[in-house]
Length: 342
Image: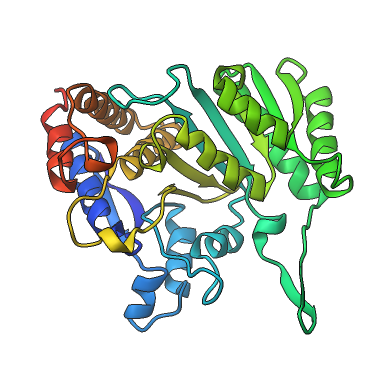
């Protein structure tokens, strides 16, 4: 089998450590990957490059798929989020975060199986801000018919392919009648005209968050605009053990980036204690995506082996410190490799 080319962005902070661990597990799984390492964020700056080098963008455009570790984003000042820049540069308009319970990971609920689909390019999260006058600043929430329509269509198509039964839109159209109003109007239209077989509902976001922490089993797929999606996906991660056990992916028409959704944790960097599971789960999503798009059964086999192995490791009590265990990054990866079946 010919090697599959994938761009690797280690990120910074704990990114380098967890990326190495994930590469080791993937190699042991039998997946034949050829990695093209590129830089972004602090790691790029330290090498004398731009925050998001042109070479990184062009390599992703060429090879179509990337696996990305966490990148530090300065708070209140400094450069714009690398994640936001990547999504804009490559028009990765659909973010997907599956949130499910894992064996051996304790949480308040044992019935969580939610997929968050987030519009990735517009809204307040896109960071269009300016100073109107001294002491007065403004942030603009942008919504377009094009973006609202395509994310709605993408979500309903995804639900159909994954045989999910219901899409719930979280919104605040009672207050933001124009922007959020457009978002739900386009979702309603796609539902009625193209996917009437999928159950559909709308919930005001504050009430929706309350319902999530009361009983997450009432939700299947959540469809949200950009900022809401960022907040609610982290909330949902808290239902199953935290950001260390939740994968993520960003899709466009031509490229896809798979990433851990947690931060770079610079205070833990170099200690060998970071949990690589979220990035590994994202890599499993990536292998499944490549298997589907390239009709590659070997990659599907590898992804299934990895998933069974990390489930078995967790069930056996092999966990990193953030999950209540004692294993470091490498030892946890080794525990998974030991459980890869033939």
